[in-house]
Length: 425
Image 1 (cartoon, rainbow, N blue to C red):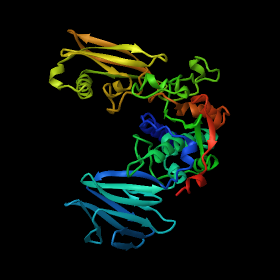
Image 2: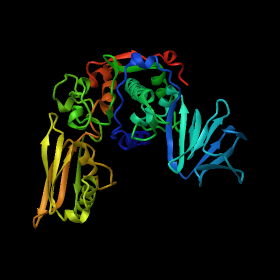
Image 3: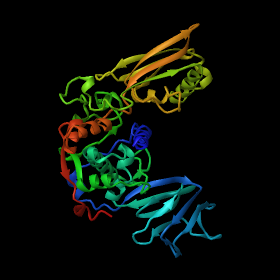
Image 4: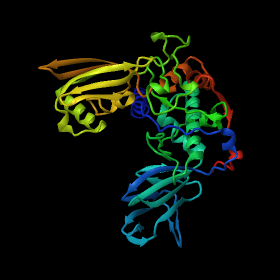
């Protein structure tokens, strides 16, 4: 039990604090008239080679040829000169021009980098390397997303898993239906963490099945279902974190409490290990701060000189920092909102600062900074659904609809009929 709990915390700390790309606004009514094929997930981008294993066997198909692969067999696709791709099988190498599709035996899977995936696998020469795309049905895709975003939760948190399933499905649909690229989403934090069939869970599968086709809707548009690990007691208005994105009435920020008012002890996410935290940055870390600042501005590192001070410029309505001022020998520089997380990295592992809800204690010597203490709360951008809060609400008997409507006030949950889209792959 202890091992499982530690594994859950690791997953949440690793994945849930990241910021996805902005979902695209899209009318569910218009979308329902648009046939949608399988979800296309980029597993590799510009890779020099990609190895694929076939536990149950399968086939590789390309223009003008095909190759049967026995159970336990494997293929290696190699980017070659002249914008071509070669495939290696049992020591034999053959040219297959620019694209191929891997098709596992019916009901089987393929594996890449030791991880199993359902659906099919397209390999395409792209930007001088191989672009590898997993094509899979939306509901099956969610099996490889939901637990890696919120954790492999027990049945008493089923409603939290359901809320994550609806949020992830809604986000996915905005990407799928608006994509004009050869793939819809990445398999990492740029969109949603996706690990195929590496580990599945009956409880997660139940959460997906019991919310099948359901999405979050505001008026006639799909909701921009942002979510992060821990809000720290209050979620943030979108415009206080990402200045370049338009706000929404359901992303105005809410107190993470049953009463809807400020009450830290009653916060749904109070049990998160990142509800409050402290980072202390010493002399070697100050140099890393200056290196990161130079990249962020951007500016030549040598022109910055030494760090003279760091101070909070202004805060937003929830207490999160709107901009941070760095004073160096080379000038004063303002870093807006969320971008400061990439400058003030965590000393222990080099990860970005957990949130923008923080206070600073700066120690100087001889007019220059020698230590920075950052006392903060929450983990992630803090916009939309708080995942630890969703778990807290589920433990208190709240339904997934209540969870979603708490974090995205004013929305409704509606059916998105796969049949209206021409099938779910």
